Amino acid sequence: QVQLVESGGGLVQPVGSLRLSCQPSFNVLPFLLIGWYRQTPGRERAMVATMDLDGSLNYAASVKDRFTFSRDNVKNTIYLQMNNLNPEDTAVYYCRALSRGKGWSTNNYWGQGTQVTVSS
Image: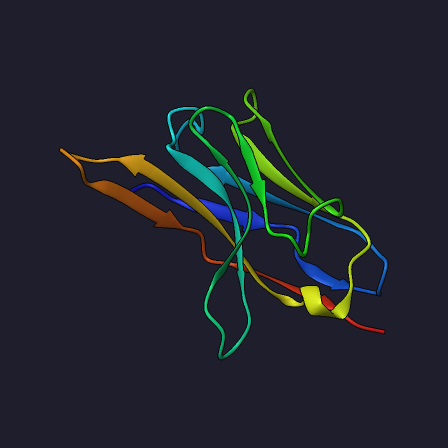
């Protein structure tokens, strides 16, 4: 079965950095969209950084210039480099992949999530 496996979360102090990794069980290149989302208790899951099929990157305004999406095609892995972290970045971070299904349908895949906690 298709899986997305995240890693790299943890506890970090304010202004610190973390790098999250996600390794899909298939090649990332055919995905319609792949990227990172985050969620805190009681809030909806929100987009953080994504790449669509044409390679264009999209970032949430709150992370622009602090977070960087990247991919390693050889390792079949995507990354989220998070710099200058602040407590508002505390959340469970999820890897997401969207692939084309039959007809107009799509297949949506989520990783299990990795906790990021930013605290003094």
